[in-house]
Length: 464
Image (cartoon, rainbow, N blue to C red):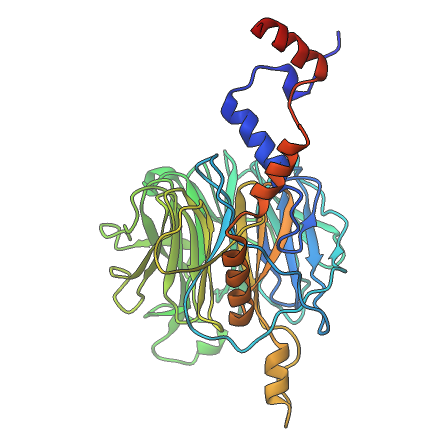
């Protein structure tokens, strides 16, 4: 007996039919110069060692390296800004906040390089990390998965490396890497993972050994959705690296690990390896509570302040100088959720991705994705730095851009240059936000329908 996979053969609500039609119409747009992959994209990671290079994690359990082709002789196609839809109430968006000026222009050529897949996970790959930079060892790409394990590959050759498993009992949600002094070696590279099981695990990258496991009873915030590491701090009175062996008073570098949870709290842990690997919570009675519900994203700007994104629709900036207890800025990004936030420190922009209600000091909304946006990164200034006598010219050729990924399987890029943003705003004003609605009206004029001619005749007979 054959089984149909055509959704039109099954009962659907009016809302689901309208949503399917909306996505079909919007999927045709070329805003953001999209790169179309074959499956949903769940995470994006910037490669700090190679210009214009990102990694993405896909729902089919693979990862890919994408090299965005950036040229100097063609501008990106103009980006039309938002169209208002009567449905659904939540619409994917890229929002730009700020008013400071950037010294850059935006150029893109459509000759991007998409690598063959990094294979290994048997379930969707949900998060990515790269090993700490090393002048001797290879760059390693890590991917956490729904299969409760973490897979790794040589980032350049895609050769499989170690699998980190038997640690999590549920989906792996977030990954970060760091390098810390230890008693056995001058530096130890570690991988920190978190998951839906509320566990936080420190792994030795070189051996795959679990150095420390923080279990749910010591982590009351629920599933850990995001991780971020702040600048190193000195821990007085602890043993340092080999170079400190002659000192009377030895200090060891520790890192502060920030964790975001399904409960509206952000917690801090001191991460050290001496005398043994440990995660010690800092001020457990004073978690950072700046949201009303789950916190999805954490990001540190160049000044060391913490930016947070939440399901309550808010984005906040929490001040380091005030011991993380004061909100310097709160952006009401929308009535829907905010999936992620990044800061373009060069240009002075705050970029958020999530729902669609426009509030706060919004500068511009880029619209292009037709399903939920799952990640955003800022591609840093591209091209060589200015040489003697060429400063102004080189500044005009350098640019930053935001790169977003989503469940629609596309990678899109958006100019962060003030001139390009102003042009996009003017175009949006002149179009009145009617871009996709015009396409919808054209479809209606052509008589596009979800029913066949025979079904329409039967319906007409019934109506008579």
